Image (cartoon, rainbow, N blue to C red; front, side, top):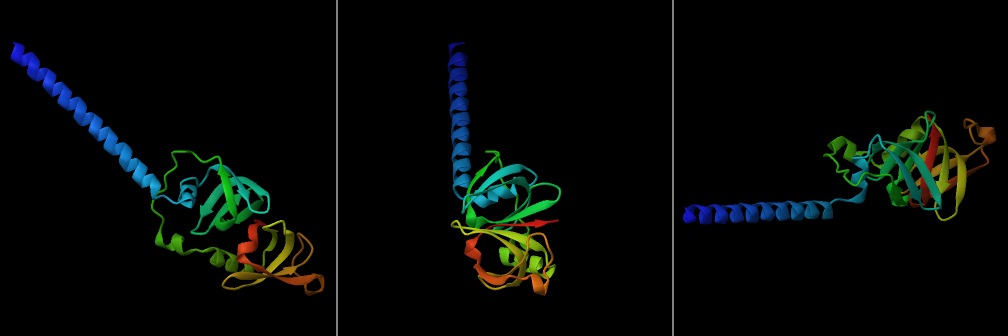
Amino acid sequence: MRWDALFADLEAQAEALAASERAAEADERSRIELASLRWHRRLDAAVGAALQVRLAGEVTVRGRVDRVGPDWALLSEDAAREVLVPLAAVQAVGGLSRYAVPEETSVIASRLTLRSVLRAIARDRSVVQIHVTGGGGVLDGTIDRVGADFVDLAEHPAGEPRRRGDVRSSVLLPLAALAALRRQR
């Protein structure tokens, strides 16, 4: 009988030690996985969530995350307005679940860069409002061209379509100067 109790006690200790080692290994794997995760991938897991995004130029955007690309995020502020945010301009994000872990991104989605999205906006001639980093203010107009690292913006009155007679000036904006781009849906 004493042998049975001794072996039962030893087996219980071994099982507790094995469970403890498995838990420690799972914790370590989680830490390693988290250490390799880039911050913008957490936004992928937040599609559909309402967030507050603080940007360079003291701009804060509040909205629902609609899509996330490799270097941009699209948020819906309300039913009528959306905001394109270059990830390089993001300074802080509030409202993310600490448990948000992304799924794999499709190859096609990973190739839709900020320049690709800006070219599409230029093609459909959307009227935009661009917030510029570094206290550069807000510019209203239509994107005429998108280069490798810049956009040409035809400045004209806010909310009005681009008409030759209404264009006040043409401004070259480096992509690094874009904090946010708003447009009507």
